[in-house]
Image (cartoon, one colour):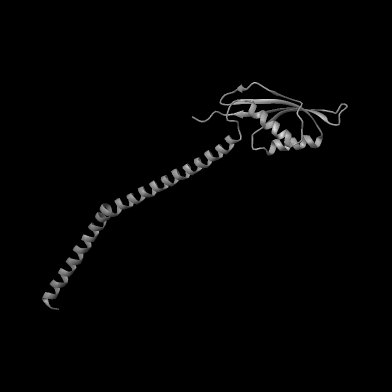
Length: 175
């Protein structure tokens, strides 16, 4: 072996050792100075993206609910006036071929956040006519609820005597 070979070998080992130490020091420094902040930024961006997606999903759900609410509101009277309900009931009775004997408006009843509107109607009807009238009310675009029904058997007439109390609700416009 040549004497300068040992020195070369030794200096090579020193260079490799210094390189390894340099890499051992540079790797954590590089990780903490460059990679870790980048990873935190990526996590932050992902969290912001998830939050934004949640917000957009919530907005879409709220829009859908508001549209649904608007559709339901269209089924209710625009004013707290029972004449709207009278017109609807008369229209449905005519469509069912029923002649109303009496129709009596009840006074609007203000409740917590809405107003109850009601009418009482009396008319003669066969079983078929009554079913047709009830079907007309059910299929109506307007929200009309039957709260009372009385059917008296026919007395000298071909039809029974029917008494109904019908109601709906008025909701004031949202603020």
